[in-house]
Length: 76
Image 1 (tube, one colour):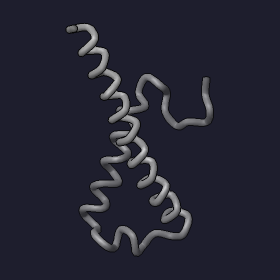
Image 2 (cartoon, rainbow, N blue to C red):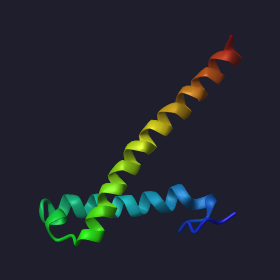
Image 3 (tube, helix red, strand yellow):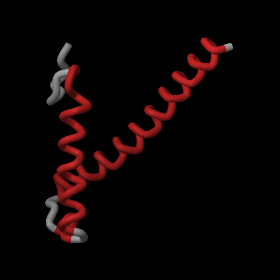
């Protein structure tokens, strides 16, 4: 099922990682200029990306907790 996402489900993490590395490299290379040269649309997308990264960390932590619970159940 496609909801207008840019990546196929079998490669979404791999492709998104490449795109995120591009952003990180730009941030590192350009420093403050990275933010200063953004138009308002790109700045909003940057803030949404920041929020999405925070949400990804929360979700990943939650999944890791579930995995740990399953491992503990199986070894008990």
